[in-house]
Amino acid sequence: MRVATSTAYSQGVTSMNTQNFKLNKTMLQLSTGKRIVTPSDDPAGAARVLGLNQAKSRTEQFQDNINTLKSSLQIEETALSGIVNTLQRVRELTIQANNDTYDATQREAIALEIQEHFEAITAFANTTNGNGEFLFGGFNNRDIPFENVGGVVNYNGDQGQQLLQISATRQVASGDNGFDVFMNLRGSDNGNTLNAYPMSVFAVVKELEVVLSSNAGSPSAFPVETFHESMSRIIGNIDVALGQISDVQAGIGARLNATESQENVNEDYLVQLATTLSDTQDLDYTEAISRLEQEQIGLQASQQTFTKIQGLSLFNFL
Image (cartoon, rainbow, N blue to C red):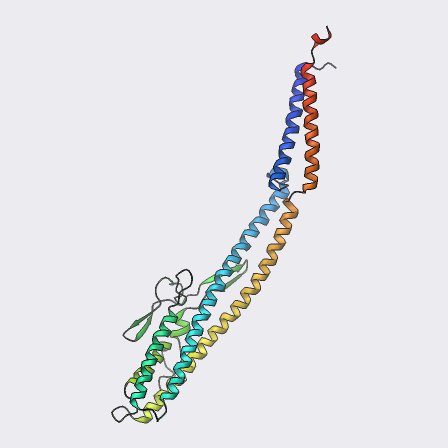
């Protein structure tokens, strides 16, 4: 069978282009370190890589959420610890002032310290996180939640609770709203009955300040018995407040433990994903370098063959 010069020329060009394409592809694989450069290289593998990368991205977002969650809970824990320490000091002062050896002047001095503690508790309750969001505002975390108006602290937040996704199936609250923590105490409004309406931590401390500032226990004030009854009731309400905040702290500790456990699970999963991704898409450098050398030889052979074809002509034999 006769082969025209043009046909041989075309086949030579095609051979060189094919060898050059293979060589360029191998060089691209070596430069990226990836076996799958385009989906056509391995459609099934490319689809798997896409799914693995999506899972990796989601898990990394969960880890970012966990970091945000841990930071928020730790700041809340610090704020609540500050309030607990302050309330414990208030309780000590209440017991001291309830002693009959204290006169009105001494009680007034304690009342001044109580006022400072009242302001401190309010400040702790208005703590913000690293993003400037108020921890105890519920969903309304951009506005200051507790506002002191003439000694009465009003709550401007709501009863919502922010949740963060830490896994595909798990959400954890990143904080507690101020109503549940500070405004919903079931304390006693007198010696016999429970309050029909919840009282607040702020109201308990403010009442103590008012009682002490009224020159309580002196002949010009209400009877000594009434004073002691009020002080005993206030001590009980402080204990209720301490118990309620301690419950919130226990909840924070449980959430932190759960979050850290999930963080470890996510980290292990990311390691598994990285291993699977590597097995699926990473290049075998030894095999690729060997293939590159073979393709270079193949391209050189094609080029040499094409050069000989270019020199072939019937006139060479005349």
